[in-house]
Amino acid sequence: MSDAEFIIDNLDLLPQIVNSGQQKQEEFAENIMRFMELEHLYQSAIDVVTTYLNILASEFNVKFQRNPIHNIESRLKSAESIVGKLNKKGLPISYESARNNLLDLAGIRITCYYITDIYVIVDMLSRRDDFILIKKKDYIQNPKPSGYRSYHLIINVPVYLAAKKEYAPVEIQIRTIAMDFWASLEHQLKYKTSAKIPDEISQELRDCAERIAETDFQMQRIFLQMEDME
Image 1 (tube, helix red, strand yellow):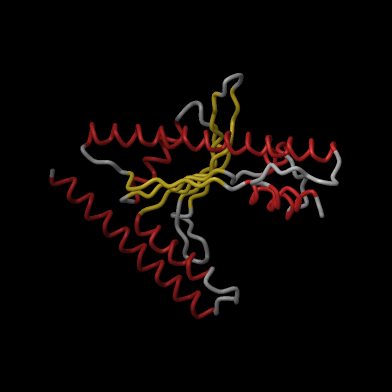
Image 2 (cartoon, rainbow, N blue to C red):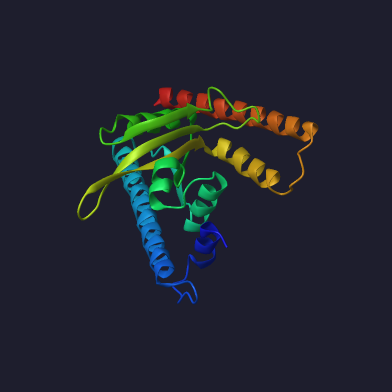
């Protein structure tokens, strides 16, 4: 059994490892503790960002009587997923290896009402002086070939621990309700089968994405017109 398989099979347990020797038991226990630290760090980074977003939402409600954020979801890759990804990439199975090589361990998805709301949130996150922008990609202005639209950011987030400050990257996807509707259904359809999706179905999905995008822009225009009437 490889080290990766060993960790995966025993990740949620602290068993007595028979016939493995004292050194193997110590290595196992150390790996477990380090991956627990990793999980805590990245969950804390998620909490920092979501807390800031909730503060922004409250401020918008007070100042403008409207909150641009419809919903916030987060996800944290499990230790098993982290080990599996490192193993797949042929990288060492360790805390340091995950920290240095993986940028998608922590993720947040923000759903907004209108397209302009997305860019407001992007601006707010980009201007915060203790967030370090690592990468950004605008799939709204430049949709993926599949028709997928969203705005992606990866930011390094400061986490203040008891003895030190550490940074952890958080991947943030920001999209409208309409974009999320298409992406969620496309994802469900894509993973419904392991077979290659026929070209004609892929084209239908792109056509749906275009129609949904036009509806998104139309709703944006209506919203701006209503704002002008106030």
